[in-house]
Length: 374
Ligand code: CO8
Image: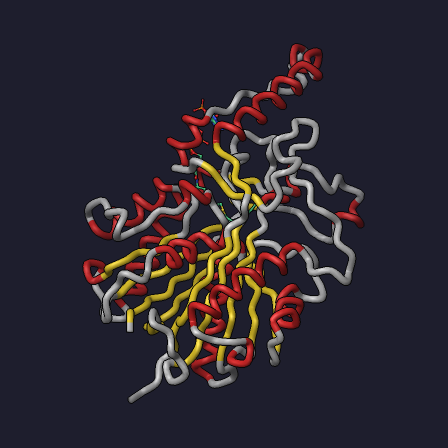
């Protein structure tokens, strides 16, 4: 029998702390009131705009988000700080992002029925890494006792799917026997909690996936990777200018443009048709009809985007069973969103059932994997 590349295990690590819309808005509104008081003269002179209040009702209606998890809750709701407080760790201690990655990786290994000896490639792929080098992936590799190599990848919201494509190709080519693709999405340090348009969007989480050959697979819940497809198209509508060169430009390293910012409306309008077309083309090129899909593990940025994409393809609303939503609880977790949906909603599928993982976001970047339950 021909061997195939399989996803044999997935791990999800969820932080202990969460912040509801109500808590977040109470803090933002208190900060906005304080800002407006402090800047009353400039606001009255028309030099700066007053900060408008945020509302939980807007957030839930516009995005479907009800709460988000945070790696560190300390400092986020403090109106004199408005950013998380992370404990300083020295170089000999495990870094924050590696800690998240290791926790998710261990769960994925257990789910895949594998040990460190079965893995020889570690990809840490996410929207940001907390340092440039040594790679977080190499720190994780060492902590787990994996021989071989590791590297970091950054592709914003499509980091997980793009990393998985690299893993699938490595198994296909025979350059690796087992790959861990890990997405430690520590987004909260990059969220502008003083911006009402985006303060509610993101949450922290870590996911991990084991990719191997069907020949070595002993997992109870494995999926053949039928096909992968990645595409990018340059856009400035989702951007962060954070980077190591700021020091050399004498700019404010904490300015709003150094944090996540976007033109959300444009993103919505441009990315929905791109993602729908991408999924349809990918399925068609593999001789699969949209109606054949049992499950859509879609990127979790906005519930209205997911409804629009699935409706465009199906001609009707997808049910929650077909296209599960996790963003109500997790918010947008950058590249991890579609993998959380997969982690929570795959064990009920029967042999032969087909599903698609699809991410879409900054770049723009879109990545999809067509999976078939073994
Ligand atoms: N409370 C109350 N009112 C508000 C608020 C608020 N918090 N925010 C805006 N409003 C008001 C606006 O001022 C506006 O008022 P008016 O009509 O009077 O001008 C009205 O509400 C409507 O505002 P919008 O047009 O902005 O609202 P939308 O319905 O478009 O919803 C969204 C905004 C939710 C942002 C929506 O546009 C959206 O989800 N778009 C898609 C965005 C998206 O998917 N982006 C992907 C980003 S993630 C990614 O790519 C990864 C990046 C890397 C990770 C980064 C980690 C930090």
